[in-house]
Length: 293
Length: 277
Image (cartoon, rainbow over all chains, first blue to last red; front, side, top):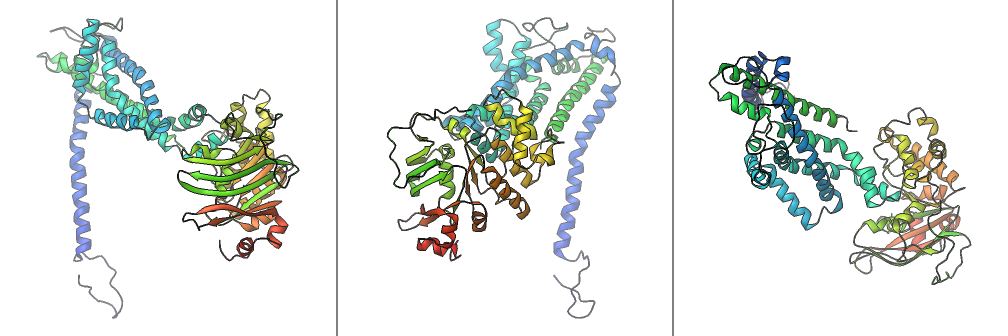
């Protein structure tokens, strides 16, 4: 490092200089970061671009009102798959949210230090990285074989298994983030533990919990592997929870491998719709968490 | 709103040597432990009705611990153990058959850090009323509590706004309103002004002087001038390090005037004169 004195002796040189090793390293790293960031964005943007150009072509109301076409038939849609996805995800949410939040309450408030909590937390963390196809196999073995049929219910349970750890861990986090002084205030006012939980801790933690739920829903909605063994597929509208049910993820899986251009087009459109649904839940979760005080 | 049966005095109550005419709380604490740690010893103090009792003393002298023992807030710390009695209107609140939750509904608390709930200003004040299943006019009670806390004029047009949106001093007055809405007999204040600026502090002090007409107040303060300004009775706590740990004890208690101008104990004299803090 050589300081070049251009002014009067004793005046430090404050100008930019690439000759300085510190400044040089800074510049190189900044440029490198930009290159890598743009590089990372390329596949993301190109996937979206492809979805929009190839799936967008077929976008219209027919997609949501008509049933999937057979073989060489033209036109058609995947209304039953949209409804099926929504039903299965709703079932999964109904099952996983109560258990997830109650589990989070236990981990974050009732007995955070207990051995049971440590074990549960560890297992939940392992399960967040659980291969989703195993959730399908698990429910296939435990529910589908027992019921004797593939069903929306089994699909919902399989997705619930995947959603549960996420909801439980984010609930625990949000409950722990409620400041201790707020809990003190609740007890100081003469709350029992249950009252402190229901009246102060849970309401304060609600935005965080909802964010976790939305993220879990978004993750589950796009999952196809667990549904292969549980909800299977159907070419008809859903009429009960106890029968094979169509879903967007499986429709994409089935149609994309078919030799008919019409079905392949529909698979693209279904991909776009699925991405839009997932995006909607993500946006919703952002809106909810932004409302936090 | 009496939930406690205060008509029946405990029969095993030993009368204090110096009878205090009208004590709301009469604490005779011989020891307070946190696990193996002896935090406080030998502290006998009476909190007289409709007066302000100030707890002063150096850091770690156990004044907050003693204050929190008066409404069983310390029970929330699992290793806490108290030996002795704390008589509240003739009942030992540490007796086996006493529910600490009920005790806290009669002996309210205001904390060092303002801690409103993340809900509307109105709901913050109505919180204790709802907890006690109050059947009367909520609007009237909330307005009364906010007026007593000197906050009404500042918040009457924004009762639906979140309590956390207020300034620190306003939040603390909101907490006072929340505490007095249920008309507790005693109000415990744990350094209520330490997080506030001098103007907000002044407002809270005036508020305390007004509140003692209807309530009994005990306040922990780190600020001797504050004790002089507001307290009728002052209790000076000190630290005993002779047994290895830091054990707090009540060194001297009496009229504020006497404690500050004619302290009986040498330790008190030295603390008052600013020799240690």
